[in-house]
Image (cartoon, rainbow, N blue to C red; front, side, top):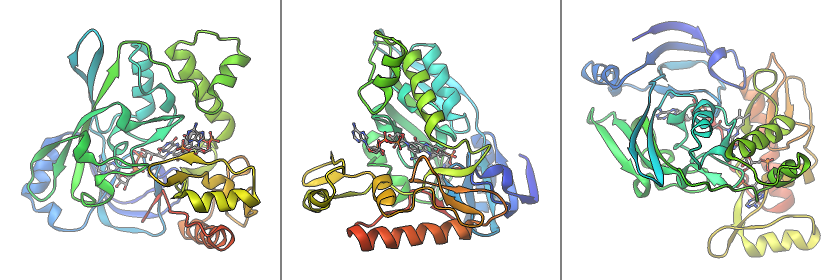
Length: 337
Ligand code: FAD
Ligand code: NAP
């Protein structure tokens, strides 16, 4: 178990904030977690980081940080129709997508190029281009810090919702996810209906897209719209798309016919947070070290030399302004430390 003391957390957050971490402990297997449990490590506060792509660090971190780096990709069930694959929590999400694409295992190609690790994917039920983790989720294994045991969670137990799960509520801070099992289809199932995918394929004259064509289209669209964290610090969408009463959405739409409304559940609908932020005049906003991305208003960016507190201040101003203008509360998607 590698343990480093007083390290910069710069390499561990995609916003690129240079705060100090008191102690970093690299976790590569479950035995290390059991050893920490035996030493009463979990009786004191601690933090968990995987890829650091959904984190806003606003201050130095005083508690020890577990860096989850558990490896492994193992097929554990296979029929003519599907394959179940267990991925170690520390595996890179996008590399796992590419592995499935190469094997023609269908289900996660629309989620190509999402940063971060497999173990963090269930925390917010990651999603993109019409697919969510829950659509391919079989189960996960997680270390319970109170009992020291590994527990299995099935789909129902994870209580997945829109960018939401049990691990953001009752299970918050109580488990370390050690592996995730996905059920992928061996029968071709392609979803090109969402957003720009079909247009991108049309432009390339691809009439019968393969799984690889879809993955490549998603990668191309994302590269054209989203800032690369290696070049411009960001954490993807800073806010969730709000799910609100249909009556409120229709009231806003009556003044703004260009507002798109997507069905959610019951009387609820989802509207794009990016639209609300753009209409409030924030798209492309720049102040000293931070701003709102010029191509995607949901993404707050760090130009360098700034602090997480500056991003938090900007996010709060946007939140207040959107609430005043449209009566809609924007919830932060990013975890703020
Ligand atoms: P981290 O940021 O390290 O951690 C996130 C949270 O999970 C923290 O609270 C952490 O404590 C906890 N955690 C991490 N690992 C574990 C574990 N093993 N056990 C228990 N808790 C854990 N998200 C989407 O849903 N869809 C997108 O399309 C998308 N696009 C993005 C694009 C960009 C450019 C960026 C920067 C981010 C994007 N994101 C997107 C957000 C982010 O990539 C995902 O939320 C991702 O799953 C975070 O993974 P991570 O390993 O970086 O998690
Ligand atoms: P987009 O395609 O311009 O769409 C804008 C918003 O409208 C999306 O957020 C999406 O909600 C919603 N939407 C569009 N078409 C929809 C449909 N057919 N059915 C239901 N909802 C629809 O969005 P974008 O910003 O370029 O992002 C593309 C995809 O990547 C989205 O799925 C987005 O969530 C994902 N993404 C996520 C992050 C992150 O950090 N969380 C960052 C970048 C991109 P949904 O979000 O529910 O799809």
